[in-house]
Image (cartoon, rainbow, N blue to C red):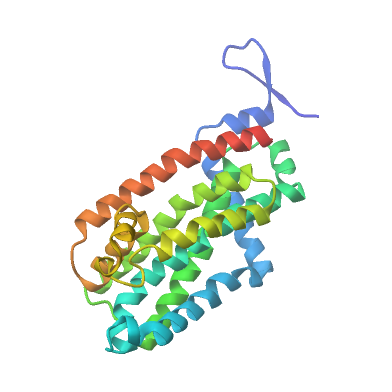
Length: 277
């Protein structure tokens, strides 16, 4: 039996859980608690990190040693490494974001969110908790790829400070982009459907960009697509910060994309969550 508390007008009692739910900024603590739940799940199921630990290394070795000599114009993989690593960092983290939507869809299928609905928590807390919890996966992906790159001889040519800032920027972009997958995870019926749509979106965004080659080497029609592709500006930001070059313009465009992604897909995700619960 729940206790009751008088409302501010003194006219009607409110359940104690409603008071806790409406406490200012209570959703922050609730979101962090649910984020910790997701982190604990990773600790108990470490194989869930396989895609963000082995995949970056496989991609780096594959594209560096198989295509490095040809793409670099005969200069060899050592010459191609500084160009490739910032772009590959973007591709790896962007691909990791679809796991957020797949995980949410799977939790719904298992009835986890039915329990969340019965708890005295803000409606948005499970969604923010899922996003923040997956930030650990993105961070692991960044660390693994950078360690592998440094082992092969990659170095920050624009200073360590800018290099670390580049890693922060790509992490923030991932946290913004994952709201798209949160929305799809709450909208589509199965986790396989979320993953299938994600692959269809991710491949054009990453391979149809300047991740692996310079934009001016591409056909004209593909250059037009690359020039409006948000991944292109994020890659330019990474290369500018890590290797030196123009940072301001690509960074501003990247920040604009991050704000736009959150502004569009976070409300859609919340709306889809309310419909399902």
